[in-house]
Image (cartoon, rainbow, N blue to C red; front, side, top):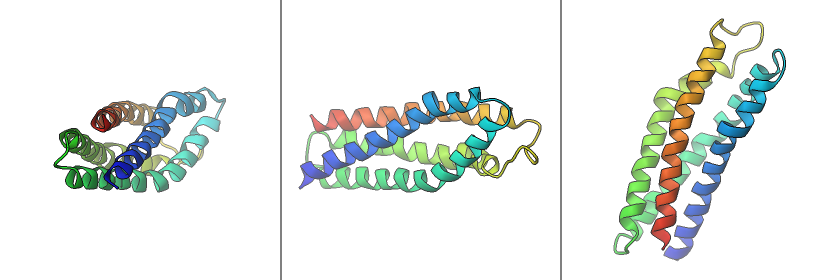
Amino acid sequence: MLNALEVFTTVVVGLMVGVELSVAFVINPILNALPEDSGQLGRAHGGRMLGAVMPVWYIGSLALVAVWAVAGWHRDGAGLAATAGALLILSVIMSLLLLVPINNRGKTWTPENRPADWKQQMNRWDRFHYVRVAVIITAFTLLVAALA
């Protein structure tokens, strides 16, 4: 049963990493290249959509990793899983303190009400997101190593 939990957890975290990589290196660059107001409108919609889904995914992933680390504490990979859990905690803290406030503003913007510095705010969100992606990639890598 523990093996199934480990594999399931790794898949869930891996899919989350894939979504966040896609946002950073595919979706946002596409949106940034769109003409006129299309990119800003796309980011606002993405902020609303992913802003509803990703908190559940992050917290669910963290919960799965915590159960893995506790239930498998007697196994060799438990330390790696616990470290991955600590990194996921860091990613949640980063999200709450750095990314969510910008996202909450951005998802309400339209071409008529957005602030003059909206592009700078989106660039700041992108920079924080790159760091968060690096953190969750590291957590995922530790989970994969813990499977061995």
